[in-house]
Length: 371
Image (cartoon, rainbow, N blue to C red; front, side):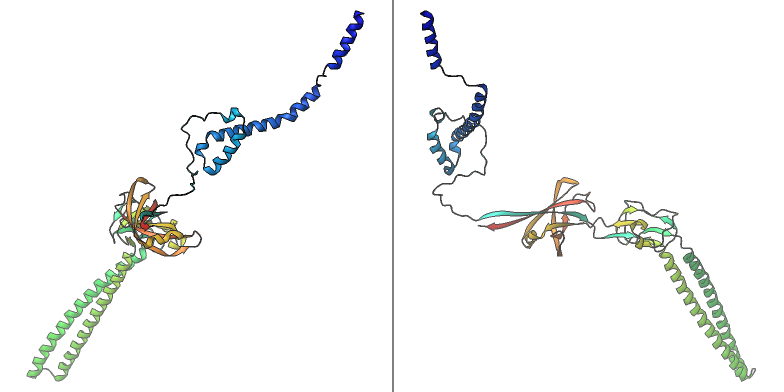
C-alpha cells in the first residue's frame, strides 16, 4: 500500500516539473540576447553622459535630450551632474540666442600682413677672367681682401707684348737721336747760308754757290721734319705697347671684396675664358658695401605695396636681429611658373655680418581702416 502511494506521488511530481534547458539551447539564447543588451547599455550611457553636460550644449541640441531624459529609468534620470573639471570646451561651439543683441559697428584699425622669402643680392657682382691663355706671374690679392676700383689684382706674362714694348722703347730712343742730328745739320746749313750771303754780297762767291746753300738749308729743314714725324710715330708705338702691357694686368672693376680666388702664380689660363664657365675664372668680385634683398611674394598679395607699409626682414643666420628695410621697386613681370612677383628692398641698419646669398624672410604690414 505504501509502495503504491509513493509511486503515485512520484508521477505527480514528474508531471509538474519543468525540463531544464539543454546546453545548446542555453548557448543560442545567450548569443541571441547579448548584442541587444549591449547596444541598449551604450545608448543609455551616452544619453546620460550628454545630459550631464547639458548646460554646455546649444539649445538646439539640449532640447532633444530633455525629452529623451523623461523616457530613461529613474535611476538614470536622477543621476546627479558630474563635478566641474578643468576640461575646456572647444571654442568652435557657439551659443545662438533666439534674439541676438544688436551691436554698433565702430571703425577700427586692422593690420593686413603678408610674408615673403628671398636672398641677399649684390647688384655689383663680377666674375673676372684672363684676357687670353697666358701664364700668371703675380697675384696681388687674397680671398676676403677689400680693394679700391682700379687696383691691380692679377698680372700675366705676355712675352710678345713685352717684346713689343722693348722694341718700341728702342725705336723711340733712335728717333730722338735722329731728330737731334737733323737739328744740328739744319743749324749748320743756316750758318753756311748766312756766310755765303755775305761773301756773295762782296763778290767773293758766285750766285750759283748762294743758291746751292739755300737748297741745302731746305733739305735739312725737311729732314728735321721727317725725323720729328718718325719720333711721333715711335712715341705712338710705345703707347700702344704700354697699353698692351696694361692689359696683362687684371684690375678691380669697382670697389669691392674678393669672394672666391682661383688664380695662382705659375699656372697657365685655359683657352676659352668665360665661354668655359666659372671654373676657368680668376676670381669672383663683389661690392659688399651695396647689398639689396630680392624676395618673392604671392602675386595675389602684391597690391599691398600700393599703400603705405612697414617692412621688416630677418636673416636666417641671425633670427634674433630683425631690421627694417625699404621697398625699392617691384618687378615688372610675374613668374608664371611660381605665381609670384619679386620685390627689391634696401636694408636699413642691417646686421654688420650680412653677406650675399644669405636667406631672408620678409614681413610686410599695412595699416588700413576698415568697418
